[in-house]
Length: 463
Image 1 (cartoon, rainbow, N blue to C red):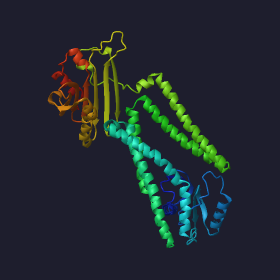
Image 2 (cartoon, helix red, strand yellow):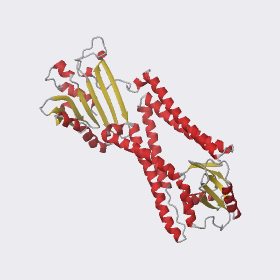
Image 3 (cartoon, rainbow, N blue to C red):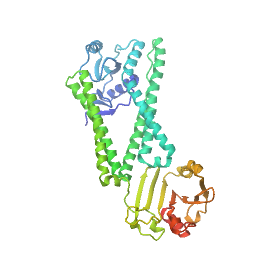
Image 4 (cartoon, rainbow, N blue to C red):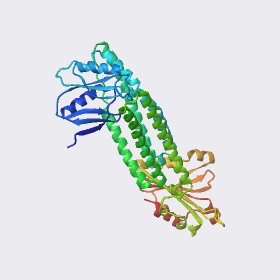
């Protein structure tokens, strides 16, 4: 039977009401509060007992202090005279417990309590959340920008959908935390004028749900990276995860170790900041190192080329030798969408390149959720609208039967000239295929895909 229990700290720092009730509930179940960290709360098994807890705030304290300051110790001693003993502390947050049946409360003036909470919050949580707010807004703005310019591609990339979800959840939690605090403070000040202690709001359920959503999304993202991504993307992902864990352990470990060694607040803060900066620059050095190594090895190439032959090749449509071609196949996939692209072009670096050899480019979008199909089709249909207006071309409907498709369009110029580009809709997939201009050079200006070639496209790419 385990004697130690840990749980994530999902309460707001100023939520004295929620924290007190939670600690009292666990004490009645036989778990006594032992320590409060930045992310976790630790309990020790004990005899179940009904005891009172009081969360208090001492704004002059710091998480870097090796011992309570003289003024803080006087406050602790004063509380001890009325039966209140310190159960745990974390910087400006002090948690007392009292085993008396009807103890004398520590806080007797609600206005002073609100003022103490505000000073503690402004010097810690509010400042930290405000600092996080700017990069969260920037990250969301960049994600939305990518979503607007290339929505189908962005949602088919594991990082795209994951980052968008994370930024949204982070902004929601920051907004609730900051907005909830100032709303509570305004109400608490009004209640204090009447001599009433106003209860703090409980954001625990929202934070738990937000963390759960991000955790599930992270698992899905890692599965996508492991199964679908290139070696370089796998390397970058796990380097970032390892660095995040290293920063957390290194920074917090340094602070806790120096605190236990009795190092002063100033020295501890400076050393912890130095470790943080060193790890940050260390990450930059690692990324630069692997980027340079990748540029001189096959690692970068592997990040472009996916293994396996493409489902449709130029040789399936024309009598050509693929030895004269460069083939590039890329792809991404999420639980929402999958998208891969194939490019086949003549290798102009050969000694005798035949630049009239036909080329082939196509993108296949696999829609996994049916309700997204129409949206993806419309987005791909209108993807080049701004260029179409500038250069005078657009899509016109063509017979989908030869392609084995449900719907089909061909992009043509306003004067009727053809571009050899087609958009084809199948049961689960949407195909954008582009026969390069070399086809008309090699087979004549009136060249068009034959019924056999259209059928081959549908057979190879249609789903």
